[in-house]
Length: 218
Image (cartoon, rainbow, N blue to C red):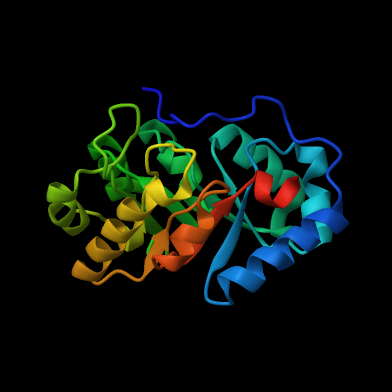
């Protein structure tokens, strides 16, 4: 199943400049505030180029695939805090769990079952909620969220969502507001929402983690 409906670059970011990344990071922090974690999405950053992020003061990174997570974590280790933000395939749960601080994308029954076997006491996850009902994306329907959380063997720390792509960031606002409402309803503190296209709206609606790529690198 294709889960990313947004137009995305297919080439890696090149000529990453630590000074430029640091300036972008500081600009985002000034707007987002100290309560919001800035996650650098590194899907399109090559392993050899991760040093530019470390040099810029990036602390938290998110990977989309197990293969890239393993390769980059082996190379860079404790230079970063590692999260997993991609499609959580059930057959890879066992290997992802010990490598990351937080999984952002728990959103299927098959992955839930694997967590029951492989979660550790410190394993923390965010449940992905499919608020728009898009077939191209993973996630739990809001009506089923409570039951899904109750059956999760790992610690559910919060929620994540990816609104339908739109040129106007304001189009994402209703989805972010709805996610914040669901989190409050279930007593959850962490909201992973907002990307380079709409992160400012996400912050206004209560995001605690924003996932940025081109906003930091360009």
